[in-house]
Image (tube, rainbow, N blue to C red; front, side):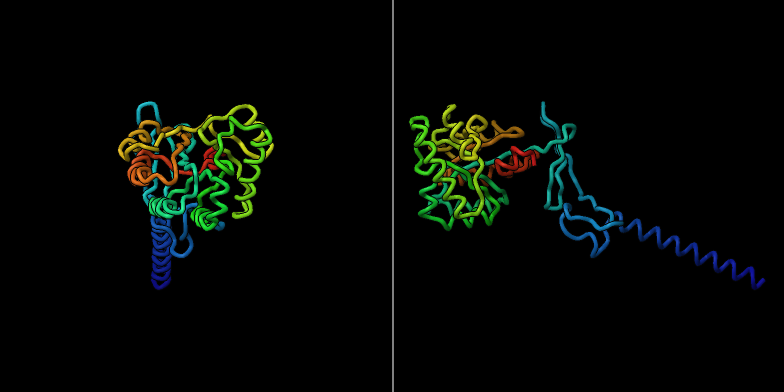
Length: 273
């Protein structure tokens, strides 16, 4: 009888141990393992650890466009249904920087937690180099908008080369990062400009850009244009130093995010990151 009781007790202990192990695994899979899975979803996991999926909500599909899954944990990523590519939009701002307006622009962008591309006028950045460091610190990209903001279509090849190379040098000297993209003043380019751009390590993005036409427009008009022209892969051209644009951004950005868009720099968009 004593031997039978011991076997019974041993079986009971083993059963309880298995139950505890199962419950522990269940809790770990649903709520995460404290101390081992903290950090952003993209963090590298150690061998044996299980990733914890964030809660998600399905956004309704628009006609002709896929629906998207957006994370609700503040780290959100976007998972388009079907195509497997992210719905990316790049906001760009010409004529950077303006000493009176750029601080407010950087403040608005920081509040909205977006990274953008500033097409930079070289001589203006030379006069106000502090904005280069601040923009870079916030994750923005500085690209080439010529040194003197001249209409390149009226320039000789030698003049084009000077404008592009001088602006490249200013950006590289102040940030340590060489620019890769050119936006022509006035938004017009030609084969000669494209050739000189390539010689300076630049790609002209004018044919890829959607000009929002924000200068001289009301905030409401800017919002309507951005909403109407939004599509995956869009590059919006706006301007630094325009108060109406800064007033429109806190409306445009949340709206497009609610439609499943992610805001990235031009370089990240063209690389599909």
